[in-house]
Amino acid sequence: MNKAEFINAIANAKTAPEGISKKDVQTLVELTFETLKKTVKKEEKFAVAGFGTFTKKKRAARNGRNPRTGETIKIAASTTVGFKPAADLKKFMGGR
Image 1 (tube, one colour):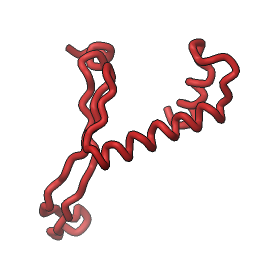
Image 2 (tube, rainbow, N blue to C red):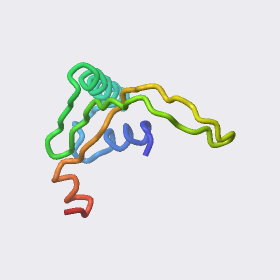
Image 3 (spheres, rainbow, N blue to C red):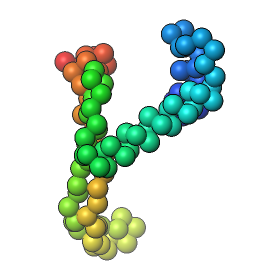
Image 4 (cartoon, helix red, strand yellow):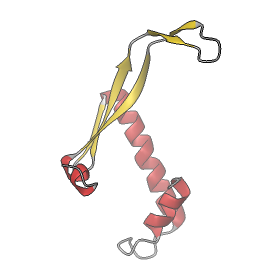
């Protein structure tokens, strides 16, 4: 599912507020993800009960290998996002 399909699914959901437009849904989806990004970057954690927790993770610098040439290269330290699903989401997906 891509972003446009996600917006359509929300706008067409039976539980969606009556009269809500796709443009309104798009605005809310964009605000939600923008807030999530800013929160993870600033506070390092964004938890959604029953869904999971997004966290800021730091990767240390390391050596890697160019697969085309076999040459050893240095990979710089970086920051990324991790996600840990909540127990409810794991259960819903068929996990323990």
